[in-house]
Image (tube, rainbow, N blue to C red; front, side, top):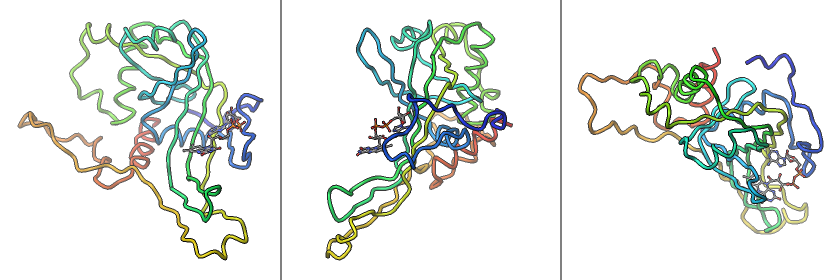
Amino acid sequence: MNDTVDPAYPVTKRNKVVRRYQRGFYDKKTVHEILDAAMVAHIAYVMDGQPFCTPTGFWREGEHLYWHGSSASRMIRFQSPGVPVCVTVTHLDAIVLARSGFHHSVNYRSVMAYGTARLVEGEAEKLRAMDGFVDRFFPGRSALLRPPSAQEIKATSFVVMEIEQASAKIRDTHVGDEEEDYALPIWAARYPVRQVVGEMEECPRQHPDATMPEGMRGYRTGRTLDDVLLEAARQYED
Ligand SMILES: Cc1cc2nc3c(=O)[nH]c(=O)nc-3n(C[C@H](O)[C@H](O)[C@H](O)COP(=O)(O)OP(=O)(O)OC[C@H]3O[C@@H](n4cnc5c(N)ncnc54)[C@H](O)[C@@H]3O)c2cc1C
């Protein structure tokens, strides 16, 4: 996961942020942080002329994004031979209430990543991906689990996409009204929005000898999911 080799993605017409270009970023650090702070992505692809955009769990390993599904999944089967996709991640950070409808907005961090999706082939690579799926969110957890059965391995498929190009876009500002509108007696504000970890609920059928593994300690009540996932991603990289 060496970001120092080439610190930014190549920019072409495909990924160049045109609207509000000053909110656009192409450096790998920014793009990776937005990706790594998310558990869910939307995978866009065109099948028989029809666009689909499928939400799913995903994770990053270096320059590769992975997602998985049932071997019978239409999306997985379609992407297996190698098809162009766009993977999008969005974080909603604030709701911005201005003095006019025109300037109502939201703060956000988002990424659009482009590449060619293909099936992960070969048992060894597939098993590695299976562990990656678990360890990305809960570092070291795969080693603590019952190994997958032959049937489970057969029933699960993984797709990988090398990031060819990507763009990040970030809005991180306060209310931005027309200068004359600040004189109006209209209430304006910004509400930060955070996704936080809730109270843990143990499995009602917990084995009496089962103890919470160290890797789960990051999932503390009230902590933002961003923080938990970024910490997990850093441990995963090491
Ligand atoms: C939560 C959220 C809410 C938004 N709400 C609005 C809204 O209400 N109205 C509105 O006009 N826009 C909104 N945006 C911004 C929107 O995503 C687009 O950037 C914007 O509409 C311009 O689209 P475009 O196709 O003209 O972009 P262009 O600048 O022409 O896009 C060119 C390229 O820039 C990159 N790019 C564009 N947008 C993004 C992005 N968001 N993230 C990463 N890369 C990007 C892509 O690679 C794209 O191919 C919102 C974004 C987010 C994340």
